[in-house]
Length: 324
Image (cartoon, rainbow, N blue to C red; front, side, top):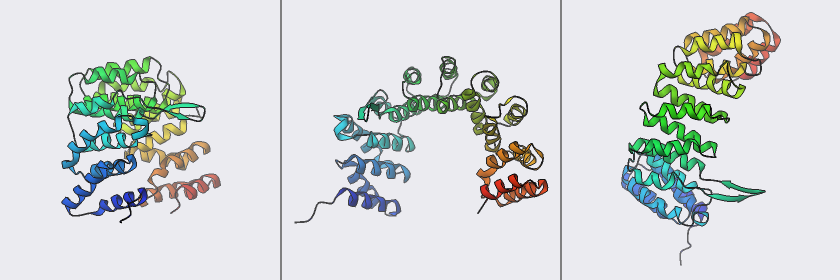
């Protein structure tokens, strides 16, 4: 009698499919994984299906979500399988709203030391994005509810979903969420990014306003969103904030945001701070530029700026952050 494969063996077999070049063998192997009773196996199969863009399995995954929603604490503790399925369907462009509607309101409270935790927050956020992508006529109604979710991961997903939905109707929802007192920095970044994606010109002043008015959390979130937006106008806004308004405690975030712009003007400005800025600011600029440590040309520019300055602390920071 042959031995039934264990969990580790099944996962290893699935992992090997990442390199499978035969489309039929790939699809058959992943289909078997999706049907497995183990949520860990099904989750990995879904992940690989999304990575390899095996579109013929989208309907199988959409239909299979329901089994993990039944008695979910037993069938999918931690929501790993459900989340992987929804993520894969999004990557495959599945636009049937029904599957996303199944998960967008799902709450899964699981016991942890000292209480319970909702493990379905990320799932709800991803379902919101799928619903927006599907073009469902009431998507913004569901996303409005999701923006008020108790869990930050769900609210962040809702913000990304509003950006995907597009149109002018989503911007007021995002502004209202901020004005109601959103305190999670990651959620604020997603909201500001969504606003800038929906209407960059209309939203720039709104986002920029939080650099000088409001909490340090909101200011840092606004700076990071401006950096990630890579808008040309964001350079002057961030430079002025760093030079005139930013508290020393949040200044490193402003410098990082400048680096994230990936604009030559911003990079040149940061290199100039390494060469000529106040010592503390120079050290912070080096840290911000460290994201480009693999860029040989920029590495040399930073090293030359530090050598020109001749300050041991700055030189040491460059050696630390830009070591090969």
